[in-house]
Image (tube, rainbow, N blue to C red):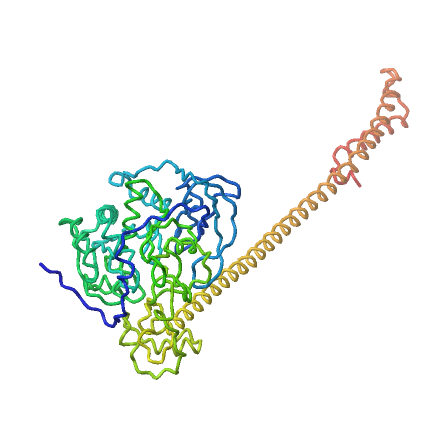
Length: 555
């Protein structure tokens, strides 16, 4: 039964030029004396350098570890010595430099001991971590870390799509890979299916690649369906291919996983096969070298190979060339420096010639013809987005779903005024991202400042409360000490005086008694009245002293 295909709106038919490089088998690049390995070869955070100048490394040794969640590892392409860890030119539209590890080859090409992965019995999380450490990233252009895409994310993925459309003109690296290594690609697909739990696997290939279609069908057997799709640019876009094969439309601002679909490039599947079956990290990829060169074709190139060396392997650029293009003519960019190295994102190098790539005419005013809107495969309004992006009204541009633009270049391709529309959209996106970043940084700074103020105020309040408690405690203690001093002083002042008076009375009494005892008992009655009177007075005073209250005694 023939699968029903769906058709997305828009799209264009640029001239293919694929026969220029697709006729010959993939050639293996020879070992070079020097490699420049960027630590940023994927979307997300760059890898963290694990080596220093002077270190000796082996082929396949991790020289950069994944930093953060959206990141992946980087490995040495050959054995040798690290001679530099410095910024270097890289293939990027900005033309800026990036941190690279420069390795001087020892010519031995010795490798670390590779360990295969028992992917059928390994825990899925552990398997994804191993794939992360092997440096796998998408080879279709986005270079998104593969271990993240191999996570079923909750509800799971019911359909796995392998993208073999390769719709961009001039590029044929996926075509040759499917022709020559179909069995290995299918082994990688089996690992993907196992990790995602996909019920259905579809391989989409444009109808201008009959040899690749035949090879993949022969290797697939009956478990995987190879679907032939019409040649139309940009059929190779993930959202577009998913819609063509399943009829499921990716929601605005969403991803294909939102509708249960995950899409991988055939090159990524082949790299996954090498990782699990051979234990080899991502050290190389197939790159198309075409255009105005002596020997156009596809080459298996180690990552970190300078573009100048790759062009030399292809016979060198012919006289009259006017620059190099990284990627295809629809979505690629001009290469600023031939010393820039090959990365995981580079799938094609095109040497330009005026006959093949004539100079672009000067841009004219927009006539609002609507041709760009009719060609847009994402159903956007490019001319509206252009007006607001040009006026730097980025909020308005974003309201027209600017971030749904896949930057395929269809609008620029059909524009009769030759306006570089995609350049304006990239500019607007970058400005919005930059403003969002500044806003995020400002929000964080404000939050830190507010928390600092809160902390200082809290500490000030706590210190004041502690000080007030201490003062109250000291006052209470001083009051208690003063009261005790007053009471103790009164007692100490009263007691000695009372004791002195008592002692005086007692001494007087003792003298009187002594005088009485000196008289004989017979003559007691005849004591002189003065003695009797003295004794009576002393007894009375003593009795009065004994009955007087203590507080009066202290007066």
